[in-house]
Image (cartoon, rainbow, N blue to C red; front, side, top):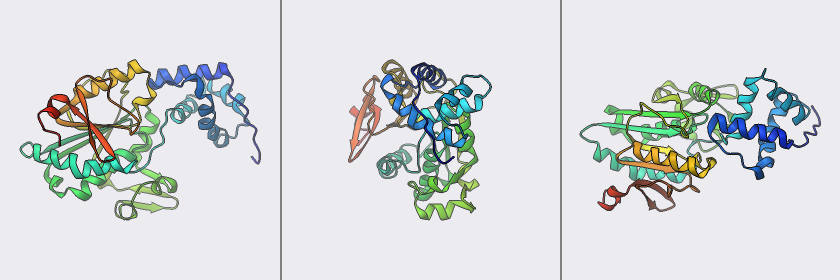
Length: 286
């Protein structure tokens, strides 16, 4: 397809998109972001050899291509991610949060971490590689990493642990690529040693959940920013309640937990995390 004039998404189609995205994930696609929808959906036209948005929406709204609807919703939901994204939070985990937790949990010898909104898995796998590389003391501990997302298709990609050239070139140190991945053609497959450390589960953080343990670390980065204020406040309140004593919540660089009662921000250099106010006031957090 040498040239393509995709055109613009009509307002009726855009309203349909807003409703489907909110229903599937709780994400709000604001009226002023139609250009963003056009940008994120344009690659689907190339992949499926469609001349423009009119033809794409004819398929999306036909009811016969739920696979294509899922692909469109994944693209709209801001699922772009990479290994060790925004390095500062991982440095904070490595230098302060995990060492403090190791001291606090020396009797139980157990750590439980949650990557909420994991998309295609780079974040939880980054956690697993970091723990493996820097904390050999945890080898004999019970360490669990839960990774969740609203999208079954993204979770399937994540669980497969297969990444393309662009994926492994974004944030992943070469030393870890060589050590933990095997290459076949233009694909890199993460080894079983790291993959077995992560458990994937479908879950929407904008809705109440059940059956989860208390977590020592929760990463919900660049997720709540897509919710409306009421939904964001409720999600953050539930996250606060899900933290174990001395547990930490990490959000995206532009996000705040100000809507959640009982949490206080702790700034450490270029990064920040959130803990319960009582623990911060008692001097548990440095």
